[in-house]
Length: 128
Image 1 (tube, rainbow, N blue to C red):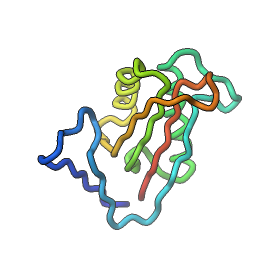
Image 2: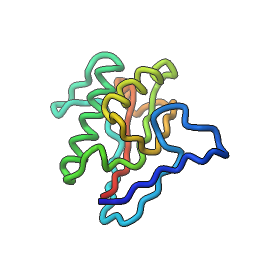
Image 3: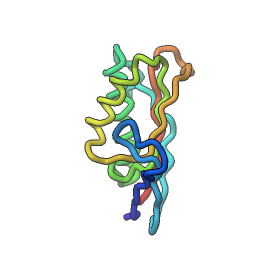
Image 4: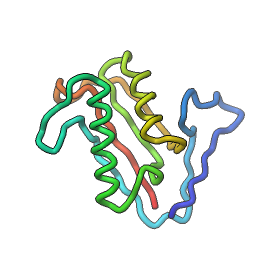
């Protein structure tokens, strides 16, 4: 498994949430790049409401990780694309629930998604 070292230097503003300013990998054998996961179920349904969509997008990330034999503990970078600033707090709450104590490097951006039904999209990088 990759050695993951978190870097949060005292010379920069500390992280505002449960994430690391920098994540260093050493001794990794594999890298997995997870394409943006949208909030659709396997049959193409889109859940109603932001929280349900956020949970579905995370389920999709978890499934891609599992298909590669990896888990959430292997995540080193997560980028979340939200469609509204009002989603920042619920997104943070759900992400913390999903990730627990694990703190990969994070980026959150406000965007317009390809399909207006999607309220967010999550992409990730994992290492072993």
